[in-house]
Image (tube, rainbow, N blue to C red; front, side):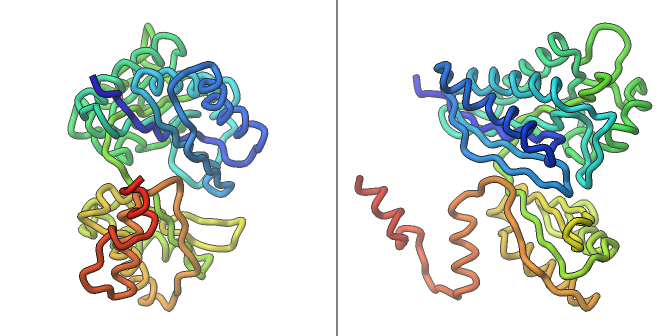
Length: 308
């Protein structure tokens, strides 16, 4: 039987305290030292967003076990009553997605997410909302819909029928008093991509985001929001590209540039959060260099790997 390899990209509501960031990331490192079949690929934190993204990969059950340990560590170190940041969030561990890589199907990753969701509620008293492919209702497929009202609003709304968690601690539905709630699900790979504008006017970033995101009639497979990067004196268009093959990275970039020009604004720079597939960068290079008939097999590193 082939190994079931899963990627996990949990997001945490902490991007400002280096010591806390390291203690959370160390959970993955320590798990590997203990013999669990997981490997840390990347982690990145942002002060304005006050958020950290960790990327690791490994065998399915080991990945799920580490996800639980990460949530437990975040619960111990992050108090949502004190958290402030530009990025929407509902809990200390805001979201845990499972992405099938090889030897495992999407339905099997859905089952993995439900297994973890039940455990978070039962053992850590953290309510869980299933989203993406794991969602139990159409209204919860999109993460922005799960996050409506954020942590503060969800504290009041958690008891409403339409906002009741999929997994909850015993008794009445309620958020954990310091760790809040967590969204858990299975999904395909996405690219977290931000474009920083040469303006501090966040209203411009919000207007651009509205025009480019799918939910407002923009690009398909694109989620976007305007973010105030106060520490840098910039406004940001923060995006998730849910399918880079259907909507390439360069297309999102060019539409943001065109929309920004309407307001007399230019792009300062863009940034990736976490990792992205090689093909996404190849597509961008081929587009901007106007390469005719280009193939990924023309890349030296790709060709070398194929003959090893």
